[in-house]
Length: 136
Image 1: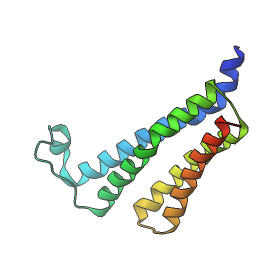
Image 2 (image 1 turned 135 degrees about the horizontal axis):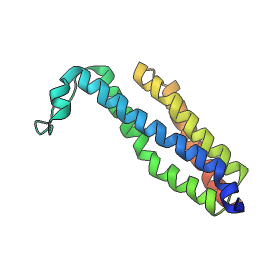
Image 3 (image 1 turned 180 degrees about the vertical axis):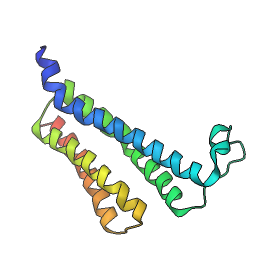
Image 4 (image 1 turned 90 degrees about the vertical axis):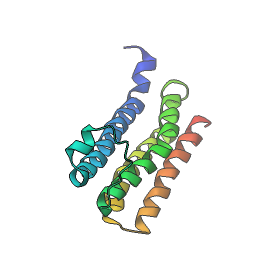
C-alpha cells in the first residue's frame, strides 16, 4: 500500500462518516417535512414555498443548515490533513468535530438550550484543532 494512502486512512474514515451523517441530516429533514406536508408535496416541484409548521421538522431543517455551514471547512481541513500534513492534533480535531456534530443533532431536535451551544462550540474547537494540526 502506498504510504500516503495509509497515512490518509484515518482522516478519510472521519470524512466518510461525515458524509453518512450529512445524508442522515437530509433524510431526517425530508422525512419530517413529508410527514407533515405529504408525499405529493415531496414528489412535486415545491414551487409554492410551503414550510412545515411542526417544531420538530423546523428544528431538523435548521440543524441541517447549521451542519452544512461548517461542513465545507471540515472537509477541506480533513483532506489537507490527510494528504498534506497528517498530525495527531488534526485527527483528534476531526473526530471532535464529527462527534460534537452527532451529539448536537438530538440536542437540537429536543430543543435543549445551552448544552447544545456548548456542544456546538466543541465542534468549532475541533475545527480549530484541525487548523492547528496543519501547522504543527
